[in-house]
Image (cartoon, rainbow, N blue to C red; front, side, top):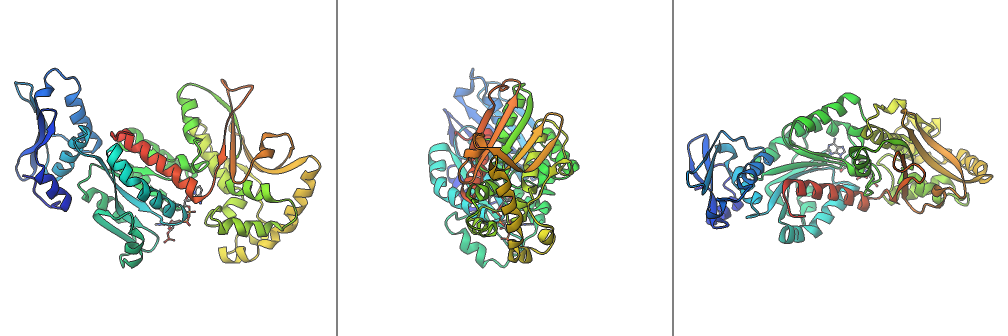
Length: 460
Ligand SMILES: NC(=O)c1ccc[n+]([C@@H]2O[C@H](COP(=O)([O-])OP(=O)(O)OC[C@H]3O[C@@H](n4cnc5c(N)ncnc54)[C@H](OP(=O)(O)O)[C@@H]3O)[C@@H](O)[C@H]2O)c1
């Protein structure tokens, strides 16, 4: 029987269907002492079928279950593994998932139910039944945390009513509770989705990854922050089994990080990257024709959720500089944020005042921006452009471009990235599309989650 601390509704359901079929066999927990349990996969179909033990042990490894001993029956119809009793429920679920006898379950800690967070939770609410029914993927919201409060449920919060549970909770938030909460659950896989823009959260990634907890994020702090922290994250990934997924850090839902990785992994050499990488600045400059003051457009962008929590992160060019650092590191350049030459759009007068005061004094931008616009009118259009060259030169700022330039024809929050590489020398490889907004950013994060699920064995 399955017993123990994790005697939850789901575990009881599993007890009822204790012997699930493996072809003509079963996977079951057959014996346990206080600290060691034996899990057995038994089936006629095993004899002469390559890969059965690889699937069993692969599933246990992906769930981080340490195997103390293994044995195979002389008849080749059973394989047994001794696992720590504390991991036995997780091991059984992982093995069932590995043979598609039950869904792949991922326990999630979602940090930051802000603009992107809410959009993501809604997208998962809508998709969860289909993912469960058609793709064998079971997503559980184990923990939801903001700056001041958190709410959790060992079986997973209801995707439809998390908002009420979150607003009614009296529990305070502590990042120290994230790993224990995820480890506590009997589900085979665990992931943190960080939807904050916080360094404090990014500081925890290496520790979570080293503990086998996957990390998915649109937060640029880790990819562009101190090199030491970035290396610790890379090290945790290369030495452990957990994945760090960050596609939405550059270009929201656009496949930019993945494209760079594919170029590099297939042996291409990136000579330069020229890009419009701020959906916010693209939206502002596409709409800035001098008829309304620039500050008015900035306020509208903030209201529509296009800007960073602090719009100066966009206007200063630092958000773009962070993205450039992320791309530079992906192509192997050791670039730090202070090596990027950034020409800020934020006037000195509001550069370091508190956020509320900066928002109240946005009009200080209007005159200098009007002057930039009239200068650019002679040659064509005004755009915010970032460039990165192979030798590590990185620049971010306003540029006057001819009206025939590809960046002159972008619309809305379009990002556009042109990669010139050994293979794409004459005609650059171009990725273009909306690069900001809660929905597309959440979709980028969700895609990363589904790629992780596929890696863990879900049928996607
Ligand atoms: N919005 C976009 O179009 C866009 C595009 C690309 C990338 N991104 C990235 O997506 C992330 C989220 O953006 P957003 O627009 O959703 O921001 P937001 O609305 O300000 O939400 C941020 C959330 O993070 C939480 N948070 C901040 N610091 C935290 C901490 N130390 N511990 C726990 N929770 C913390 C906040 O909690 P409270 O609710 O308690 O304040 C809030 O719920 C950012 O990294 C941003 O750079 C956004």
